[in-house]
Length: 150
Ligand code: SME
Image (cartoon, rainbow, N blue to C red; front, side):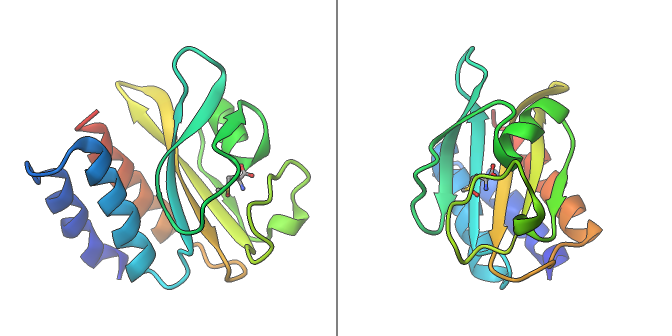
């Protein structure tokens, strides 16, 4: 399933009719609509020269967490660690920012531009423990494609 989405992501990136924001928005919607256990999909980016993340394009319920300080929550930890963070059970995490009571699991994968961690893709799932290394490889691919237009 994830493999078949790769060419669709690439096609969105190459679509000259869309702005970069529209491309990222379309990718969020593509992922949310086609992967049953992806219930909220969004991009966060470093907010200028501040040590905080700012919400970018997303698909799913609106969130109050449009600004996340570095180090806070799963997203803020990835901003500092530069590493993928797979959370099979969000209730087992101390440093976690709850967006919705329906969320059971989360995956955050950093987005690198010229080797620098400039943002991330964040996925919330209402399914417990749904993510595998296949999701990590797929989301790394998505971020590499997005980095080409940034
Ligand atoms: N749960 C995230 C906050 C962002 S929402 O999932 C959209 C976190 O702990 O960083």
